[in-house]
Image 1 (cartoon, rainbow, N blue to C red):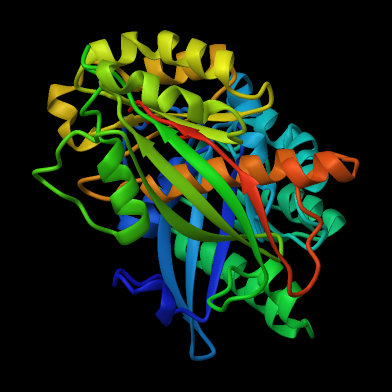
Image 2 (image 1 turned 180 degrees about the vertical axis):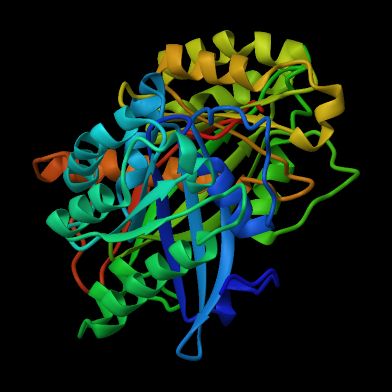
Length: 412
C-alpha cells in the first residue's frame, strides 16, 4: 500500500516509472491525487503537458519508489508527452464509464503505448467514475472483455469516493515488481530496466550552462538550480556568477551511466564575450527564466537566437520557468511558458530550486533527450568521436555538451 514517508533513494530496492494515459477528462489527475495525497479536486483542470508524483510501496519486504507521470490527454499536447513512454515500466490506461468515446479511444491509446513503450510494459485498464453509475455508458463486462482480449489487468474505480483507487495502483506496481523480479538479469540489463542504485560503465557528456544579462536575466536562479541538482543545496545569499562555474552529475539511461558536466556561465552583459564561445560543441542547453520577473521571459527570444547562432543545429534545448514557490508574485503564466516552448520546439518545465520541485526532472529530461538524439545517429568514426559513443566495457568516453539557462513548467 502507498506510504507517505519520504525515503532516501538509496534505501529503495526498486524505483519504477509509471504513466497515466487516456482521454482528457477521464479523471487521471484525480486518481493520482487520491492515491498519493488522498485528495479529490472538484474543480480539477485539464493537465497541460506532464505532471508527476511519487509513492512509496512495500512488496515482499522490498521498498519500491514509484514515479507516476500524469500526461495530458488533449491532442495538442501529444507530441509533448509521447517521449515519456520510453523507460516506463507500467501504464494505467483510464477511461470514463459515463463517456463511451473515451472507451472507444482505448485501442488508439493502447497502440501508442505499444509503439513507444517497452515490449514488457505492464498495462492496467481502469474504468473510472463508477460513482456516476446512473449515467454509465460502458458496462463492466465490456471493460473486462477488452482487458482480457488485450491481456491487461482491469479494475473499475471512483476517485471521488476513493473506491479501488489504491488497489488499482497497487495492482499495477505489484505486476511490475513481479515482471522485474522474475527476470534473470545480468548487471547491465538489470540497470536498464530498473533505476539502479549501483555503478557501472561511464560515458562523459560535457554540458555547458549559459546565463543572462544585467537586463534582468541575471538572478533567475541558474546557480541554485545547479546546486540543488548536484549537491541538493540551496544558497539564500547566492551571488551572481562571474565568468564560468561547473559541476558534474551522474545519470543512468538504458544500461549506460552518463556523467554530465554542467557549466553555469555569467548572465551579466559585461561577461558575455567570455561565455559566448562555450556554445560551440555543446549538446544541450537549459534556458531559464524567472516566473516572477517578466523581463526575463521577454528576453528568451534573444537568448534562443544566440543559442541557435552559436550552438550546433541539433542542440537540445529545455525551457525552465524557475521560482514557482513564489506563485503569488507570478508574472508569467504556466500557459505562456508552455506556448513559447511549443512554438519553438523546446522541452518545458517549471521548477523551484528553493523547494526542490522538478529540478532533477528538468536536468534528467535534458540529459535523456541528448542521449536519445546522439544514440540514434549513425556516425562515421570521426563524427562518433565528437557526437556519440558506442560503449564498450571498461572504456570512458567524453562528449561535449552545452546547457543554456534562463527560468520552468513540465516538459518536455
